[in-house]
Image 1 (cartoon, rainbow, N blue to C red):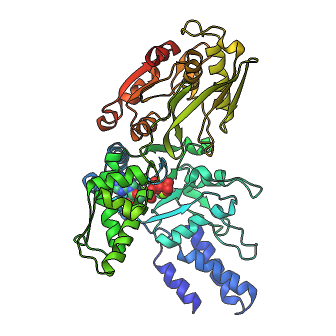
Image 2: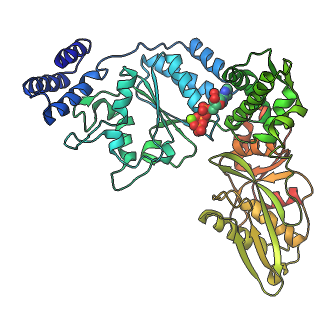
Length: 521
Ligand code: ATP
Ligand code: MG
């Protein structure tokens, strides 16, 4: 009877020669085996896997750019540049007549819509979608399966995916590709390369399956929070960055997407619970200050649940949530309108982390005047420590030209601290900020206005370009900073930003540290 099931399945497939041969052999063997013998079960499982895969089964691609644009717009507010990149990507596919042979990488902080964009791409193409996380994978067998000689051997994730989607050309999304591990169990990253690489994956070999399966028609979309991705993989990927939202964008996302979904989930109708735009803004700035919108959705969900309790308790509908009601529903705001720190020796920098952009205050203080010396705290990485040393050397040797007492650091033991100790920080982009903190200290001059800066500093006072300009500008906006100092070489990155993100900023571009000092003091 089982043989019949297998035969029925095979009849619907377009088996490649090699697979057909293997299946025939196994069927023959299976027919001779005694029911109940261990070998019987093993062979039956193997045949089950071989015959359940979508050999030669493909869904027809719908490559219609108008249709794709509609779906992307329907599911996502904003993200114009991202959508445009995806349309270009699909257009190339349309031109070549197939979508195969490329790997997309969506990179950005949590909750900015990476997974959701991936789903929309699959829907636009009319393809099946399958998603799994490779974060924390340490064993190559999770990708390529176990050899059948192992007891309890299983195929790897990709074969599972194919079985699930019943199509040989799905969209497969691999989440957290930046968090893939390596261990004594082999190197999953290099196994992954074999799967993703369009030059190799037509002959993908799962150890359990032991017959090659053509994965070259699959569209792979990877997601990651940062660029810590093996370079062999990164080289083959088409990178699209999502950088986080400003308040106005979040308001639109909340209105059009999150709130309707939250209502549905709570079993509420639009005319039972309403929230004002002001209230949304208050939730965003007071309770959900993040790059993405996941926490925002959670907070809105809390509001809806509390409203449900009230309605069931007999409250009159519609319930209207305004700014005042938000605090009654969600307690005190987690973030009060945070003012950038200020004072002598305190300067606001801008950082870029895998969670998105952030402001990064830096403090310098003179501990005592007995001898010269310098200490650093704040859980800094090696590169950041070095840029602190550079900032110190540069400022200590250039005090006079900047109008400070040339001997100030001869009799100062200084302590430079980067607060928010919980987050590890690294990178050279705080160089100018640390130098400015040290100069502010030596000049006994504080910066009395909302100003933030970023830039790498060299020993001779050059200001070099840094990454993550967009994320940093968004972070500055989030805390109400409206004046920025950026490296001159980043001018283009700033000019490329959409108008609504750039608007309202006074920006100074610096080539040398002199330019920075001239703006600040
Ligand atoms: P992670 O890195 O944590 O996996 P992610 O980038 O994959 O995050 P998603 O799960 O895609 O984030 O998005 C979180 C939620 O926010 C989803 O419900 C998604 O629909 C919604 N969302 C994010 N961005 C937008 C947007 N631009 N328009 C509409 N909804 C959005
Ligand atoms: Mg995701």
